[in-house]
Length: 295
Image 1 (cartoon, helix red, strand yellow):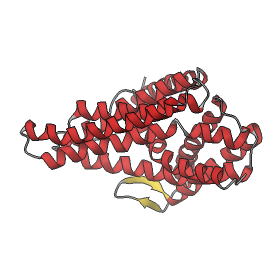
Image 2 (cartoon, one colour; image 1 turned 60 degrees about the vertical axis):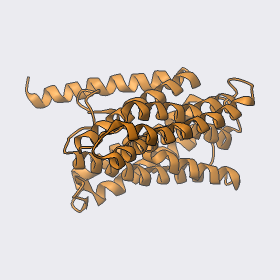
Image 3 (cartoon, one colour; image 1 turned 180 degrees about the vertical axis):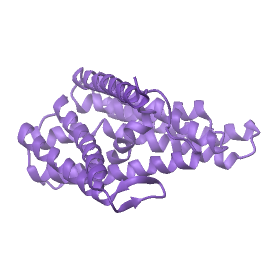
Image 4 (tube, helix red, strand yellow; image 1 turned 30 degrees about the vertical axis):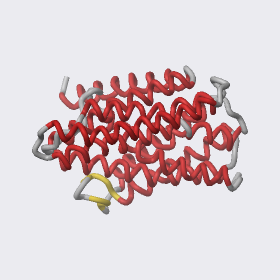
């Protein structure tokens, strides 16, 4: 068996396992969905700290992971009330308390660095905090995005797995179509310094693919075609930025992949970089749609 065929089979098998885990988490309900996002958060933050260490930084990995977990739960705990899993409005207050705890941990990061006696304290603190903001904050917003989509589409406050699945397909549709169009038609490089294979043709193909998925989502789930297509455009544009940002980090660190947790695919950040960066932009877009009743 040739190396290319072997790598293809490994990549395919690994991707199938990942897809199965994601689907199982989504369709198991809010708890499973939250567990999936928490896993992505912890592993993603740890991988980011690995990239930072490759550049000579010494982030406080334990404190950073702890801050990330607390920040994630600041979004997860209130979501149990939002999705009507637990009928207790105090969960919203608990979310604020967790945010306060995260702020305390943030201050402790500075205090701890005083006693670590490292050569690059500013760099260490910066990368510690950056890992939390880069990964954990978007993951916390992803707890809220399906709730707003449910409200916009169904006027419902319950967990509907198909809503998030189609949101995820917006991201993956952009990635797949960008790759296919880029490989077959790509001539004009988009950002060769960071990602030599990305082209403007692939960029346009990715947007078209995401828009097509958005139209299918509107047809299957209902809701406004304009809202879904608008969300698709926002997700596609921000996904490209997310991919370039991670490429920038890896190139700066001098590594090919952010990790090795998924054979043939690399690390968590390699697979979910687009989802991470697109989440805050999608949240803002959906919030505007809901607030101004753009249906």
